[in-house]
Length: 103
Length: 225
Image 1 (cartoon, rainbow over the protein chains, first blue to last red):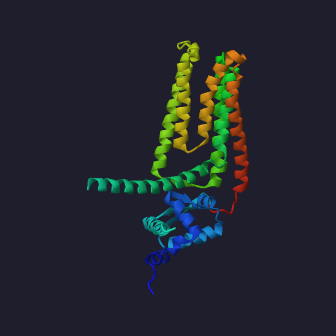
Image 2 (cartoon, each protein chain N blue to C red):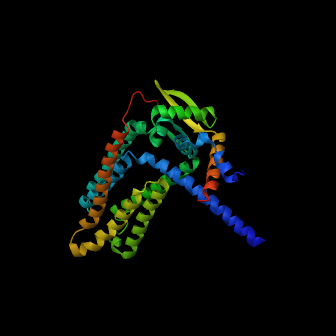
């Protein structure tokens, strides 16, 4: 059986970015230079634990860069999108757009 | 061949423009997060209220007028301190791209130029070097209207603070309405009322936004920021 090439493309889409919460994080980071943990949490309405977990996965994949510093005695985490993350996002958008053309 | 190339060029650019527009919309949406605490509405509302009271009280008295104008400084200062020490810490830190810094710089230049221009006109009029009765001429009113609406519309565009459009219209229409209706109604209050109403509406909206913001984003000592 021959598989439709369009389906093949959509099945092969980057699943790490495809997850809605991570999509929200990456989209947000793509329009700013950098943002801290609190700003991303407020903008995406994710909980602290959820955001930490998603950021960990994105960092592991090399899509975001996380810088941990201290502001006085409190930890301050600044996050920025890497070039690889930006590239993956662009590929993802292109693939999804291409697929949605048929609807 | 040239026609085909041109068509492809336009198709490509149109697609590119559409994509950029979406990214720009997302950037604007993210940027507007900074107005969610209502501080800007409170500041703009206060300014409009003070401005309309100033016009009402000090139409012929320079001292009253100056005092009212100077009242804006502590009000804005207090709101700026609230922003820096209370709300900003709850919103979190974000650094926008260079295009946003350019927009901020343009807004600052427009606001400063407009402020300097109006201050010079005000000083010249107060010193009797400009005939203030010339304001009654339709052409001066039209220029004033275009200037006020133009400045606020430009600021709305560059700062993405959409209430500047409403402020611009209130300021622009306020002066001609005051002057044109005075012979019929015997008072200038109706024009000023427009600015006062818009100012009060903004102020109330600012208070509601501020309370909602403080409830939605409570300060938690456990939060990592």
